[in-house]
Length: 288
Image (cartoon, rainbow, N blue to C red; front, side, top):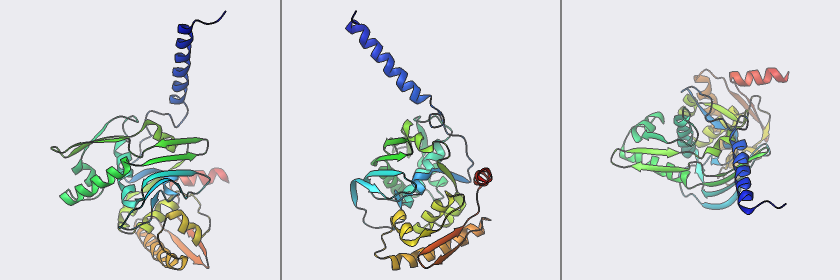
């Protein structure tokens, strides 16, 4: 006997709700909020640290791209629409994630411009507020499709931003599905003091995040790093000079903060030795 249309529609609706709920209640990536982390670090998805999504680029003209393939390591894929992002944009995105970490995903994060700038290590001036606004607008205007393993996310890095100009405050909301970028161990706690010490050195900042995301970095070609970081250096010869200076700055900043970092460039091969984090040391111990 055929199912009446009204009952069929109700069954379809129930199945749809059940399907959506199973996605919400899945393991790891579907927790209501991320595990807490300390103020000394910024927790960042590895796909953002191992790609040219936030490039090692300096100030200047930013081309707009549409569904451009972003170079990424480890079999991850990124299709990006928007203006090219830089390390300053990453600072702001990391800070938004940091301030929203105690809330449920998708909840409103209410914060003043003063507070955001303070956490970023900047003074509350008119110029810095304008720069902060530009970063937030770029992050809101992004459209990206990211695939990490069997999971993918399509949306923006910041879902929406509301500004109260009188109170100089923001209400910022992240897309709830953005949390899939933190599935399992697909994130890194980046030392904030080292990153701040490298302010104004975008390639050194990119290298810091990239190598921090590897428990035991393996040798890479200069050409590979050039492609992954999104450098605008016109030749590998020029990039190699930039790379040597950036690695030197990173080694100095890391060692000053008690995290020895060493490197050598032999021909076109770069070898790096880092100080693994406690979680990375546990990961390496399990592999032995």
